[in-house]
Image (cartoon, rainbow, N blue to C red; front, side, top):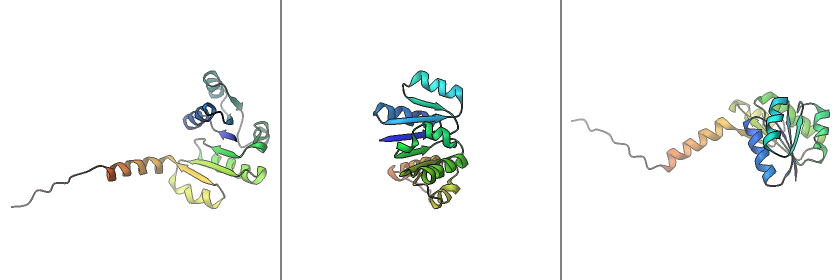
Length: 144
């Protein structure tokens, strides 16, 4: 399975590293040259320095052969644009977008993004689960 990841920050870095270890055919696109160089020093893989919303850069990454595109930059607007380009221009089967603002989840879904991952929502849900899984005892002092 071929995947294209756009965004080489913490999320993109770890996703790229994990998929690379699992022997996925994965390409990482990052617009900051210094970040590209740092990742290339640590991970032996396909890394492209460029703007992931640029059609030529996406073509250079082999997006036409990709089944999945994950847009995981730190900017919701960029992630939406990247996913829309992948869907509309390249007919990508599955697009995944990182979302920072939970208010954008419905908009992304309405505009055709297949899967959204909102770190705020994920962390909130994990913490909520801990509340529900813990056996909290609440004591109330009786008034006398």
